[in-house]
Length: 333
Image 1 (spheres, rainbow, N blue to C red):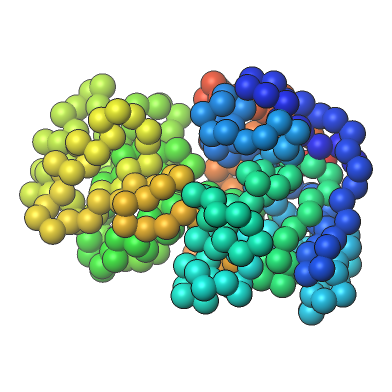
Image 2 (image 1 turned 90 degrees about the vertical axis):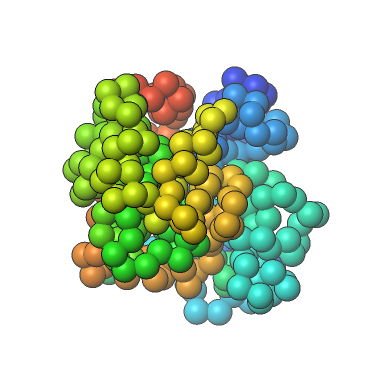
């Protein structure tokens, strides 16, 4: 099979690899669509260390190619969504309702249940080894396309988690700092949970335009307005929830100052202040697909560019440079 291999800082590319086979309790999924996360770009840049030789990627839609006989209810040929975090479903963290902190089967790792493209080969390959398949394969309902569900595996799940963890209430005002894919999904999640007002902050014209397209009520550009003054005015004294989805040295100063007393501040991404990393597991994927199936959310506008697997170097270049208005890319084999 072909796979996108991390070879060292700023070095990666397609290589021929042996097709994997499932161990006990695991499955092999033939990839039909994957993507590039900003974390993948950070790995290539050397910001997040992994071992050379690793297959990159952690977002996956595909078809079951092989499955361990110990996995019940799943068969070859079925379309599935696989979450970025692949919890075992049996350890104390999983059974305590914290599947993203799962450590079963691996040595302790700060990223918990994030294995694909981190501690084991990832999804940017023609075939993907999925651990703990019983807990992590989610069948895709008939009628939903790969593009409709791909971003549920990480981007949307993480963005929704931010506002879920803030205990957002009906009628709250939400300020979003950073309108990349995860920030935009946090905006969609805020709407689903009943926010009365969603205000987005960014300096990228393409992302400001995408935010307007997805229904963010007001977008603020710090190059043009005093963001704190405008946020306080628009929210009548301060936002109830501030979500930080941008990485900068002063990333918490403005969000803290824009909150009303008792407001909630959430940092999304690899680590969080009041939440956990991207929630995984098949039950969360099932519930998120119900939001797509019933028309409550549409993530396909976020997939702004398509590539073939052999074009993956071009895809990484586009994402890392944030060129051509890119939001998320879809990569097919």
